[in-house]
Amino acid sequence: MSGPSDNKLIFTALGAAAAGAALAIAAIKMSEKNDANMKHVSHYRDPKPAYIYDDYRNEPNKREEKSIARSSSEAILFPHSHEEKMRRRVAARVAVEEDNRTPRNSVTVQVPATSANMGPGYDCIGMAVDLWSEVTVSRSDKFEFTVEGEGADDMPKNDTNYIVVGVRAAYKAANKQVPPLKYHCVSRIPFARGLGSSSAAIVAGIIAGLVLAGHRLPCWGSEALLQIAANIEGHPDNVAPVIYGGIQIGIHTGTRWTTERAPCPPGLQLVMFIPDFVGKTSDARGVLAETVTRQEAAFNIGRAAFLVHSLCLGNLDNLKYGVEDKMHQPSRGSKLYQYLYPMIEAAESAGASCAYLSGAGPTVMALTSGASGDIFTQREKERTDTAVARAMMEVADSFGVKGKLIVTNAVHEGARVSKVDPPFSSDGITYRDNI
Image (cartoon, rainbow, N blue to C red; front, side, top):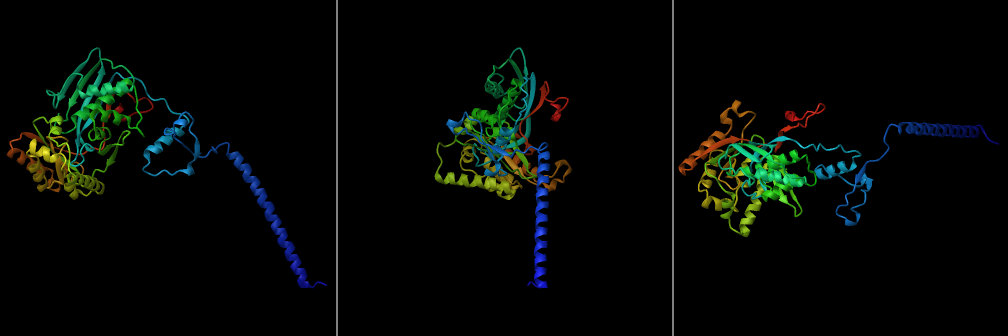
């Protein structure tokens, strides 16, 4: 016979079984309720997963197939993968708004000056300078070209002008015939002085032509505007900063031109000695040796790396080593611009972070530090631009070289449309300057 303790065990087991059954029933009911709620919510929320669209441009047998979507968890996008992000964004869009392809009657484009090479970065490193030219191109019944400002007497005023060349390239890209056009240039970039006047003209012409033709180019993954401009110029060190602003490092990948921005340290000022005489790029290239030694190549590779490293860290003290060069400055300094190295030494002794031959010359560019906000409200002794400018001018006087000094800044923005007819702005959207 069972005793009282055995009965207690039986009752405890029965109670536990009943409680477990109740919990199971409650769980089933809760699950059914959640399923019903999810069905209700699915009417309001898109249940589709995120997709990545594959690009089969490099697989010829699949070029005609539609992009295949796969889970976004299968690939990783890093913060620097800008072109890939844009490609996927465009591919994943269900509806793409119609581009504004309306041809325009008139357009005004502003373009900055540039300082190329920056010492060892021959044909690949350049900086946008805060000196702007303005180009207006309008439909007309006949060709006309007028210029005012810097180089007005020296600049060609026919179809060989790089502005006209750029416009023709833009219309070719749009597959359209160039109509009769009227050109007017307000030039504030010294002409043929090593400050990128030709590259500014090329880019201004291309942008003006694209706007007038109502044609737009792809940027991400192709940089089509850069391709057109660099193919005309032959190298990217000037046209890249004209287009994008800042300090640009441009190369040819074997397939296309590409460029990346290097940091521009805060407080940087540019002090330029600009001689009165014209420096032709063809003459400046003509004095260069056809070959360089292994030691010279190693020297320039190290200096270019040091230059970029100094810019990335904002270490202005190291810039004077980063802009040293053995590829083009020694030949040009000894054969064309005898004042170059004495002026570099004087500028650095007066407090410049560095100095170098701007582009193919004849301008000498010095970089100084210490600027903060509007310099005309800042104590002058906090900066070195005035002392550097005086030192550079003294060297110029000692060599009997006439010219002028300009103090300005690097500029982070590139070429821009400043006026257009009819305007891009509408009742719903107003762009900068109401263009």
